[in-house]
Image (cartoon, rainbow, N blue to C red; front, side, top):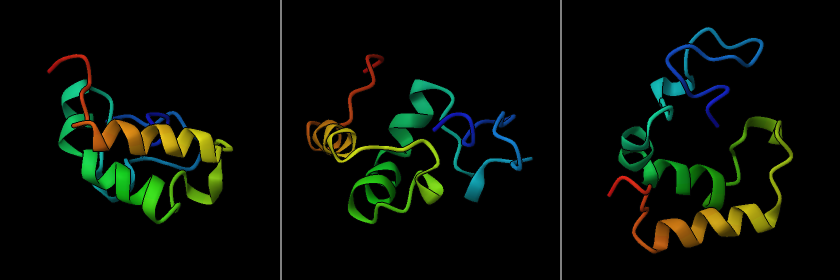
Length: 75
């Protein structure tokens, strides 16, 4: 996620984080947990065009993480 969703994206073609959503710190991940869940698990819209080949098993892990309270290790 961070290759696109960072203050300075490293993914080619991205000068800024899509939709202004940045995920480069644990705090930002937690603040955006619902968006992460919605976009990657419910809608399967992220990663865009499944650029990173996210699997259904990985999506299930994100879903379980969200449903368990979206803990980042910093909370």
